[in-house]
Length: 194
Image (cartoon, rainbow, N blue to C red):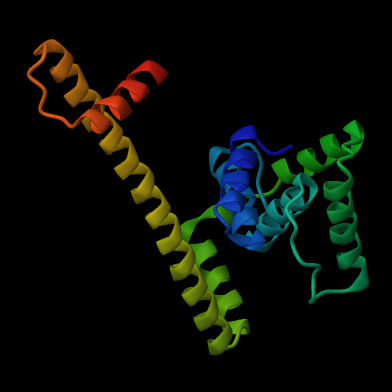
């Protein structure tokens, strides 16, 4: 089961308009953390990524179906997506304990920076330069949109604080107002809402 914090981070990514693969990245990140902490191991970084993606599908992240791989490999991915959509969460205790036991016998080298770097380079080489460029451009767009939203939120908060401070000063100075009546009304409304 993924941690609640990971699910919340993935939901936050979804609300910011980020792609399903970015949302799934939170689950993959969690998996690498588990390996580093020593909760379990993995045979390779690819296995750790596969486990993370499987968790993401079961949590309801709308990942596209696999293009590569055999029909045998594609079946569990399809089943995981269906589980995520339906919301059913029946987990076999015996099977999950056996899986965890098998993973505990694996090494921890799969989560090393060197192994991850090698795997990421290999994955990137499979894609065309056009595809990589398009992804980078989209990431930059999303990043700037997120940053703009955060800046707007910060600016609003600062304005409200400034108005509150000014109103408090005005009230204290009893009659020596430095604000227009409209600004005072707005500020009072904010103060009463506090």
